[in-house]
Length: 312
Image 1 (spheres, rainbow, N blue to C red):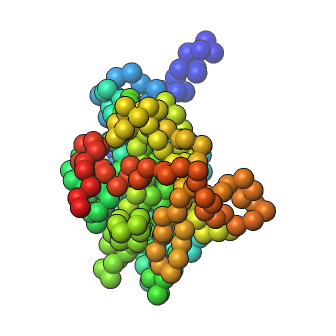
Image 2: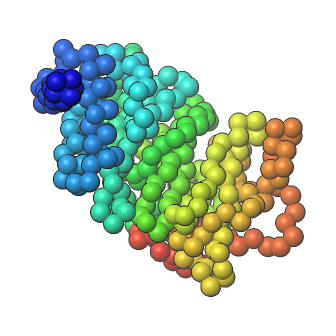
Image 3: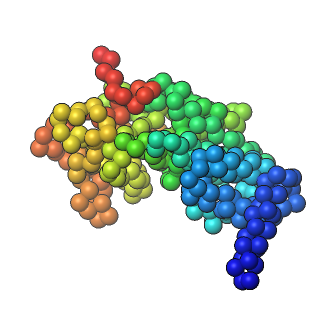
């Protein structure tokens, strides 16, 4: 009898959740919406059937699409959602939600929403459309919310230069069973308040990039973080496990040296071989390397993630 009651309660709760995303949510509390999203995300993570994952994901999209436009949505924390990335800017103007849908063969699709407070307190909501496969040269292109370089964002850095706010986003992409990716993305808002992804603010020698994309073996982890004391984005220098695997990024991994992008007058300047032995006690700065480091792999990305020769 107790088991029957438990099953009955679960069925009723799922039925209630189903109604939440199938009807007008204007009179539904954010707590109910949050609980429904939690259940649906559980199906995305745990179900074996891709069709069930996709159905649950479509319902998550519908819930966010209808609930984020409600009054009070920007300030509601949604802090019990463990499988959805949630970041908020310090200036209180920007919130971003991102999550992934696992596909067959280890591939992924990414989904998300941006909430942005324009002047006079009005909040705009933008749905993100994963268009990674259609982006020919990721390190050069400027994109919008309908042509998004999908990723799970886990960190946000704000910089204001000449009156314009730049939001730098650090993100992760599972990519496939062979390699993973990490991304340094830039988000700004135009005069029409529409989001713009990418900005020509990364200087790597004579190259200027609109975003930075790292690719490395799915069997290893890569550090990518911001050190506010030195205004530097620090990351592992990636090298192939053998010279024979040069430019084959599924064999790349950290080589125990660190590089970075240091902020200087509106730009992020690439610096090599950072001394990270005592990052808290002193400023992070380059030091002499005993041997020449190869050029960074993120200069060579193409549509399929395969290397291309740098044009002279």
